[in-house]
Image 1 (tube, one colour):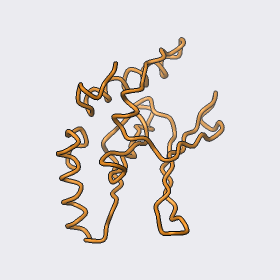
Image 2 (tube, one colour; image 1 turned 60 degrees about the horizontal axis):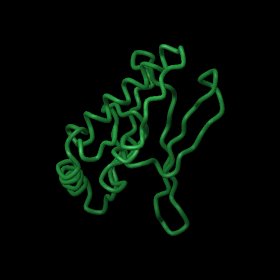
Image 3 (spheres, rainbow, N blue to C red; image 1 turned 90 degrees about the horizontal axis):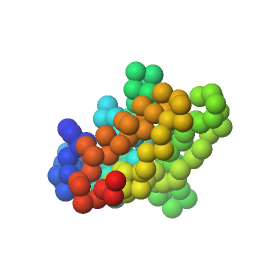
Image 4 (cartoon, helix red, strand yellow; image 1 turned 90 degrees about the vertical axis):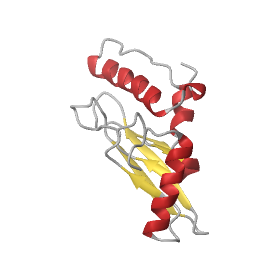
Length: 140
């Protein structure tokens, strides 16, 4: 969608229109350049939000989105994150990636523990959640 922070109904209407215009058989869309706190989805998994601001300018850490086709033709998706003391630490997988506002409603800033980069990431996540999700979905 043109603006990923649109309310759910508006975003889903736009996603469905874009999918129909591209190919009537298209069922999902993956987008970037709309920084979100985590690899996540909207519209019941129809829209995958992939840009987590990995650049050091945004304080992000490496992340990836994986989509495999199951035996019955279903999409199986996962978010992959590097974590640990170095960005080349072990990989953690979250499958399937959460709906953005569901994840935001459970997000509680943990503080940076003295790490300025982590504190900045926590602050950005809290800000982004409020930008993308309506107040009634937020429990912060």
